[in-house]
Length: 304
Image (cartoon, rainbow, N blue to C red; front, side, top):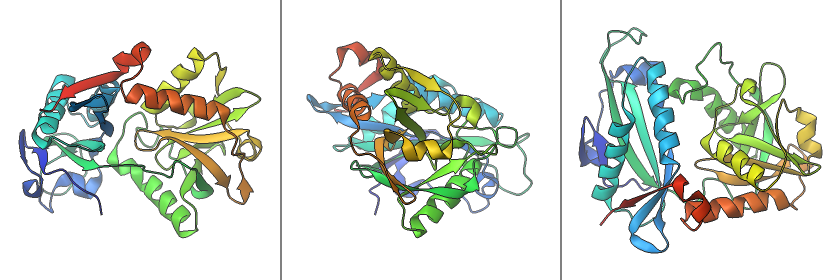
């Protein structure tokens, strides 16, 4: 059972979570015409009165750009101030996941994005490990990742996640933890809600942005960190069989952070992961506010 924090941002103000309700006739509920973000925030280990948010500017910018795909303008300053307000009101004490959401709020039918009202809300939940830090098993999904010509994959649009939901459930009901999706060209795209990396011969390889992936913020951060360590990073199409012979395979995402893959279908993946471990340890150091070199990746918010 997920633990929701007691206050939400709804219709321009902070109200009790239990009072933040929408009508069953809400347009976005019927047509998936919404955009959302996801951000992790943790208590500062060195200051209990402070919360640390990872790459807030990137997350807020992506949400604002995603809203624009819905013909909706919402400023980055407005989003940030709402997040700050909700954190101060809730005064969390454990790691949380923040869900900002832009949606068509009119009532009624007819799929459209013109001549329609939109609104914005935020809620928060307590969140530990989204996936097992010890590693996950993956199956190759029978579902294909959407193409950018059919859905706006540069944004986090709620309607696009039906494929992710089908793939995730298919994997779970088959006895696996996670799904890996191929794109329409038969190349590996991503997991149900995470980006994918492999290591071969000391090089870090990940499907490029031309492979119908979501341009993940954790993905971009891992690429930047790897380059700073002198690791050669290659963004290119990845074949399914490469996953089975890779030296390391791991997933990245805001909720998943960096999660190793230990099995794909019936193939066990090498559990010696020196490159992933180096990247993961550095990312933890950064998110906990212990890295001066990357302190600009962290937003500090006083909650007391």
